[in-house]
Length: 112
Length: 115
Image (cartoon, rainbow over all chains, first blue to last red):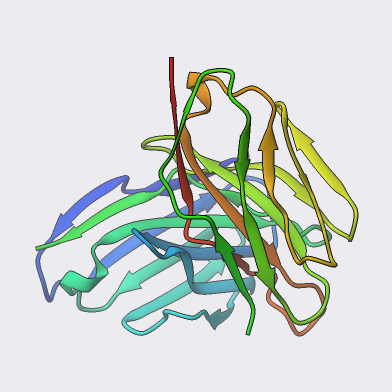
């Protein structure tokens, strides 16, 4: 158990509404990542963080923003949800001296 | 660019059959390689890893060898069980300060094992 939780686990929202997903870790890891999982695409990186208030974009960042005000929390915000953002979202953490990542249980988001 | 290609699924096997899931990669530099497994309704779990050429990762009867000459990291298991039914992802991570440590994933391969 890597000590990662995600909330909510499931959410249905309407097009145009803002949505925030939360990732919480208990192990004080420096690096945190947000991925989305879609059929036929594996997992793709949305944003990542390399420390408090230090974040950067991944390959599919359009329409998403992130914030990290504390080591343990990494928030993903959809400013105005669209149907193309219907997906399963995974948070992951990584230690400083290793390259493997450990994943949270995921959030299934449906935008209607 | 950097990428990972896995064999398409689903792969359907009978219990106790031999499993191979092919994975090849393209990378600038020398990546670390990983296999992750995802059981239905769950997140991804690290199955095994290899950090340099000729390393063999192993866990729970699964093995994969980092082959630099063929840029491959094929997953194998000698005798699969019904409980191995899941989606398997091959992934790489690049080293160095200019890299984010992000994982680049293959598309995933679904394994179904029948009794």
